[in-house]
Structures are given as C-alpha cells and as structure tokens.
Length: 420
Image (cartoon, rainbow, N blue to C red; front, side, top):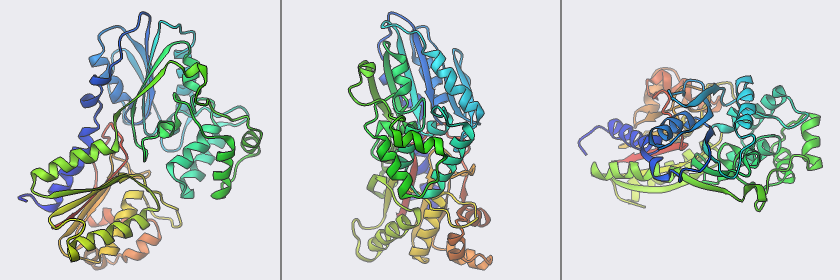
C-alpha cells in the first residue's frame, strides 16, 4: 500500500458513492417508450440527479416532477424539481406530494409513469392521512427518529399514517404502466421501505404499526391512534389489481457500493472482507462488535490476515439520551475508537453516502490509533462525549470530520476498518 491510511479510506468511500451515482447506472434500466405520454415522478435525496440522468438518456418526449432535499437540486430541462425538508417534513414537501397526484391524474393504459425513488422520500413526501395535520406528522417523525426504532419499523408507521405512501401513489397511476427505478438505502433492499414505498405494494398492516408504536412508547395524537386502531390506515396490498402493471428495478444498492470499494482495496494491495450490507442495531453496539472483529484480525489473523479492510453497510440507529450533535456514523466511530483503545495500525472511516449523518451537513468521520490520545489532550473525555451523543462535536474539534457536501445519491451507511 503506497497511500496513507486516511487517503485509502477516503478513496474507498468515494468509490462507494460513485458506484451509486444515477448517471452511471440508470441507462441500462430504461423501459420501452409508450404509445402515449411519459410522466416522470419521484422523491428522495437522489431523485433530482436521477431525473437529470433519465432526461439525458430518454429518447422521446417526457414531463414530470420530482422532490428532493434542500441543496440537492440539479438542473433539468423537462422535469420540474422541487426541494423540501429532510429529515423532518415541511410545507414544501406537502405541496409537492399533492402535485405528484396531479401529475398522474387521468392517465390511460397507453401511458407510462417512471418513478425515481431513493432514500429520504419518506420525509420529502408528507401527505398525512385524513384527520392528521402536518404538525402532527412532524411531531411523530421526530419521535420516531429519537426512539431507536429501525428504518423498517419507522417506515411501517409512516406508511399507515399517510395518504401517499404504501402503494397509494402507484394506485393513483392506474391504468398506466408504472416502472419503478429505485436506489436502495435500506437493509435488505425491501422496496416498501425505500421512501416508505409510495409506488409498491405493502404487506404490513395497521396492527404492525401499532405494535411498533407501543414497543417504543411513541405518543400519537388521538386521530392517528384511531386511524391505526380502526384499520383505516391500511395500505395497498400485494395482488391489488391497480398495481398489476407495476414493475420494480433496483439500479443501485448498498452491496454494489461495497463491491466498488472492495475493488479499490484490492488494487491497493489490501484484502477486502465484506461483513454485510444490512448491519443494523444501536450504532454504539455495532462499534463494539466490529471493533472486536478488528482486534481479532490483529491478534489471530482472523477472519483475514493484515493488511485487510473490513467493509460493511446498512443502517444503524441511535437512541438519543444526551444533548450533543450526534449522527449514527460518528456515534459508531466513537464507540469503535473506545473499543480499539488505541490499537496500533487500525484506522477507520464511517459515513452516510448521501453526505449527511443525522441532521448535520457532515458525512461522517475518520479515526486512527491516536484518536483517543488527541481527545484527552484537548480535554475531551471520549466516553463522556459518547454518553452525550456528541459524535459530531467530538470529531469536528479533532479535525477528523468527513465533509463531502451533497453527493446526490444515497445507499446509506458505509463503514471501512483498515487493519495494517
């Protein structure tokens, strides 16, 4: 290996992000042009970049609208781009959701709807079910984000309190043909969990959503609870005839990103060990487990001898207990550093591939054998910072934050632990 550990880790992250860029992966999934109109709709952090790539490669006329996160818009000629808030929805997203329904009203069997869906769409498409207002939706979203629930659990609740998610937008497109082009940001690549599945069938139920609410002690306003208890929030189920002409393709996934990073590692003479693309759980617990694996590599050359890099993806969670500036990737790294306890020749990077870890415009951070010593020298007790969920404050003061700006894609968390 000729580059520094930090340089190599940064190149691995860049390779993962580049592998998920819409421009690189959308062309091979273009559907056949229809006899009628082509309407493009979509939502997510990558949706604007997906729309731009689709425009470049589409051979015929088209029109449409997609909604993306503030700061993630890119210029399109025929597809309108609307920006809205993430992770807590706002009025701009509510307006965009209503306009998506307008886009697909009155279509015929000769028409084609192309749905460009990526992570973040749950917050970007707030259309509360009847009796629930936007403020209630925002409060429920904040409670879910703080609860420690998995992304699948959060999206189950969101689907059943929505008028657009859980296949409802796809049902509104009937009888047109619907082609979903998805960039997955969820463990296991479950289509119903990406942006809470506005254009795919959903097998989960209101009872499932209620179980999640009870499990995490999430307070619901009376109208929302009544909707779940009555079954009035049921989503569109598999086999519904309105979804008979829906087809779904994954154009980029976390596994693809890991494999791209692995190729760069091999070129650098470092053996990649892929631990999985769907690792979930509390970020600090995942830090302990992966730290233990890194120490096993150093002590026993298992599961691979050094030099190697342990690669993983998925989406961890953080149960917020403190008042710091947290994010799941920096929480993972701070826990990892404590587990490694200054072990020589172990370096790591963790970041969200969309460039935003938590609610900070910071993708993640890097650690090395000297991370804890430098923190103590600055008067920052690492354990206290972890207890306060202050990963961003910790790494920012060390100068080890990973800042990319908007990446215009999203295949969720990327973690690389380099053992030399």
